[in-house]
Length: 192
View 1 (cartoon, rainbow, N blue to C red):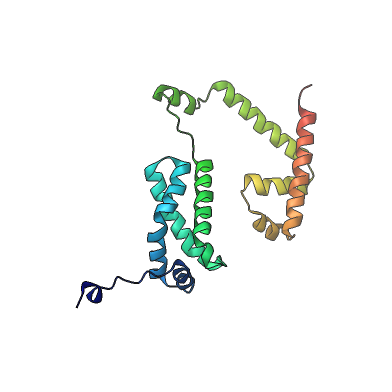
View 2: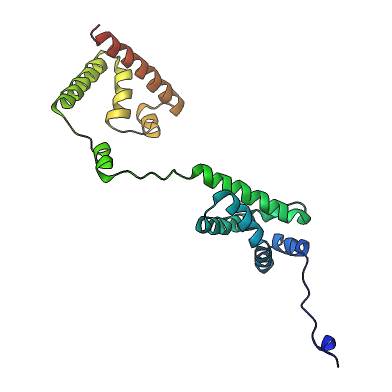
């Protein structure tokens, strides 16, 4: 017996067959596809991201997404192009959503994040609250009750719909109209 007769290399399953099997729910077939195409996906993603760890993480996300969407692939022969296209889009999305890295000295960060309450701010806020209440008193009862329910008592539109025995659309319109009327009252009260 010769060596060729004893050893027969394992049959390589064509990608198209693996795609069809994966579309039928065979996870092992999809795993084989992932092994075959991981280099291509990594290269596609890394070309855009230029960061190894982030590219590896996104590769996993690409394969998870592909596994969920493989049923939508019409032509199994197009799996490679479909996967590369998906990887490219997901890499672009990651780049767009990536926040720019900023480094600031801690003093600058503390100075911008702390909001100081000054006596002047407190007085102005109190005056504004008083003006709003005076403006509310000038409104018709339905407008006043609608605004108070939403802004002061924190009622949702559904709760207000029950309370006022009106459809939600009517409540939305009442809020809109009441806000406009209150704004008009406040504008008339403002010193010229």
